Amino acid sequence: MRTHTFKGGIHPREMKELSNKCPIKEAFPSSKTVTIPVTMGGAPNTPLVKVGDSVARGQKIASGEAFMSCPVHSSIAGKVKKIQPSLVTGNAIVPCIVIEADDSGREEFLPPLDPFTCDKKEAIARVKEAGIVGMGGASFPAHVKLSIAPDKVVDTVLLNAAECEPYLTIDERTLQENASKVVDGLSIVLHMVEKPECKAKAIIAMETNKAYILPGLQKAIEEKNLSEKISIALVKTKYPQGCEKNIVDAVLKREIPSGKLPADAGAVICNVGTVCAISDAFRLGKPLIDRPLTISGGAVEKPVNLRVPVGTLVSDLIPSEFRIRENECVKIISGGPMMGFAMPGADFPIAKGTSGIIFITKKETYLTDEDQCIHCGHCVDACPMHLTPVMISHELDAKDVESAKKYGLMDCIECGSCAYVCPANIRLVQRFRLGKNIVRAQMAEKKAKEGAK
Image (tube, rainbow, N blue to C red; front, top):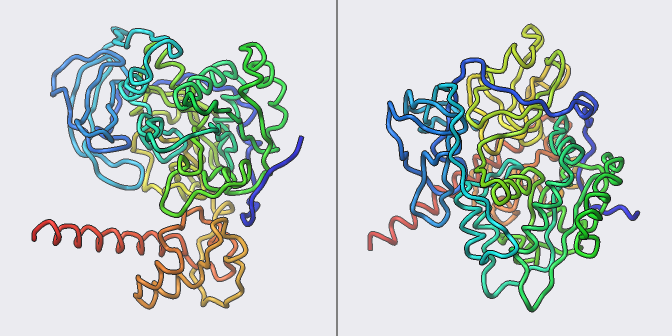
């Protein structure tokens, strides 16, 4: 089978062997309490419950009126104890609903719905009502992604099964343990986006380090008689192969225009967890209330893959589900080590977009000071977006944001490839994030001034 790839990228140590043989295990917070962010992707939500209310598992507890809003549901049956600001991934303090389990096991799911006979508007509404967002980390509302504009035609649905971040293996395990559900969810997405004038196809894009999963996936495709609609493409094991722009480039040889979405290149991209959640939303009427994820890193005694209720505090899984070598742990990362967020502790909730928690040792990271840039150009060779990180960094250091934009600041995907290869250990991604925040602040100020006229 031909292997696809893109220009640029890096080859960090995979570290998949720590957890890729560990089956997904069901887990529950030791405190029997969840802390659920009111908003997890899309426009801000408003709580629909108040302190003291009893809620069922699957009951909607927060939503918004905006098209971009994505509702949130209770992941356990219990009583609302608090509605308060709490620390979440990204080190933001946001409103959260704290629920304590009452052991009643009550559930409030949506009625099952046949995705192939219902109206497509009804299908989009089901995805929204189930609160489904992209589960690869970005948490973009799935119903928005699947609402294809009339002037756009999508001919390909790409299942992003690359999982290129080191350590993370939850998608790999899901592909092994739930291949039938993955294929079912993918076929539902394919049906939702295709138009009469263009019969779409689906491609499962998977890195070569997971090639051993191919027979199981092919069997699931054949059992559902979908061989003519769904195929599998192997992509080179390289970071950041899973970035949507890179995977479209590698598999379809198309370019997503700057500032545009994959639909502008005729594609829709879904994560493995997302299509499973879509299958559950139709077949079971189940909202997105559980989150599978990987717990790994050198400071974890026995890395695991878990499925937990959304809102479970990471600290509530220690030591009942895994143990930490506390004297060796120097960093806790929510997400993968390349694009994840360093957290001050484990007292933060697992959200819909949390694909993993990594406990890093000193040997697994670098805690060194920055040196002067030596203009070696390694960052240029590594950049998968074909930018010149060295020039963006120089312009930002000179406080010339406009010049940084001309060199591609806003096209940076913050993958960290440039920082990984930098011999001077320059914190390039942090610089670019700060630069983007300045640009966004300027845009907001300009919009406010125009609105005041």
